[in-house]
Image 1 (cartoon, rainbow, N blue to C red):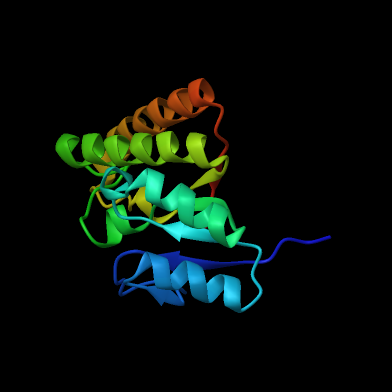
Image 2: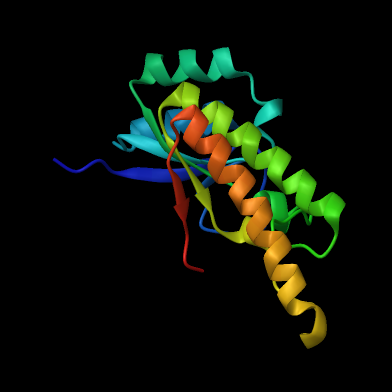
Length: 156
């Protein structure tokens, strides 16, 4: 048997195929009413999610969260793992760490896609930017391992 899901977000989003964005409860209810088994949560900041309310709603609707998508961190706030700015890299790691913490509670995976950002330094600085991005990604991987969460690297 296959599980079928849909991407939803508590925040309005200008990017991605997010069918139900802007109201998490209504999105979860719509997913259930349309016959989906679960959802991909596209989240800007997991620390702003009422985790107990989310767990209760999922249980009430008999829905699973299959994965947490992280792209809004980059596309909305400009924080990315491969940013040339240390502050933006640190914020991306902080957000992903929070997503991993929520994923450990929900029993789902975390998607690393758009949050990786772009390599945009000039040729002479590109290698340094890549190394710093790898180091940021390793921090996320180590935290995910500690929390028992699978990270999915999205090839975009």
